[in-house]
Image (cartoon, rainbow, N blue to C red; front, side, top):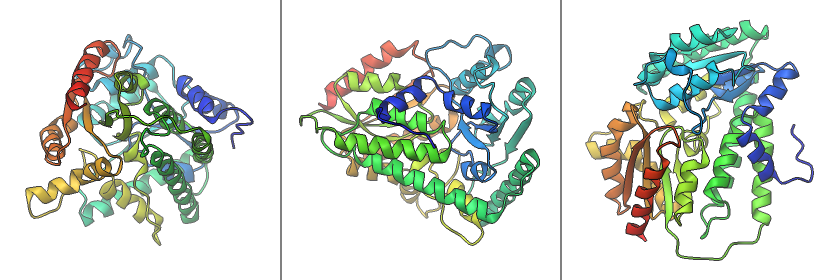
Length: 386
């Protein structure tokens, strides 16, 4: 367990954010196996139960892609290319292996590129289905069992139902602690800034679950102990997108005079808002969470009789966030070549606007190279809703 001593827990979060992978490298040195995963579909409960450390991969928006494009098409999702570039450069040389989920074309069609070029000791492609009916749940359970068997072979350790149940409990507690921290963003002004929150989210996804929970709990206690900032009329913004994992866009929003009070990001609320149900067969609960509870564009969760009912099933949680966190405007920040999110934008945008919340749609790179024009559009949007 990490001991934060008398230092600020937010300082610790900043360290793990700015030196991403530092703790994983330390754990690797002590004999731990570090297994990378690339998206919200990474089955972290199974990895924890196996005794390995789940480590979510991220890129660097401030670093140009200089090696990855020699192996991967440039029309691939810029996030995927950036992370692959970092891996090729040796930024994740502490990894024992990776679990890559079947999610979008940019991931699915590059599986062999990752595997052949990284040459990690362990590699597992997780064939996640895209629909949520009962046969798909059974299929998901089968592919999770395949993952378990492959991890048992890697570690030489039997993974029992009790191991999985304990891991489920630990990750549910972790998610609850993060939700408790999110609550501190409901006040006006929020008790924790969007930049601080992003650093905590990124730091947390690089740590073993017990250390992640300890950090989140410590941050919450520290933030609660701070004096409340002065009240004021400042636009309250929700950010929507996939893996936005850098403070650059948050700084652009808050630097323009707004508060980022909520998100619908795959490293944020998508990761922490839904728990795994305790089921007699723990694999059942895990399969149901990853297929039926996660609201991601590549999984079809709508099963209503009408188009409106399907919209409610897919995006209704966003309207709830807007209400609970008193959001004044939403920003959809979508990466180029991200077809799943791109196809969702028209329906998602009109659904949010139908509730009276203005929306700014931005399509951009996973890079700070285009940040100036993004800032200009954000500033104009904030002037419009102020």
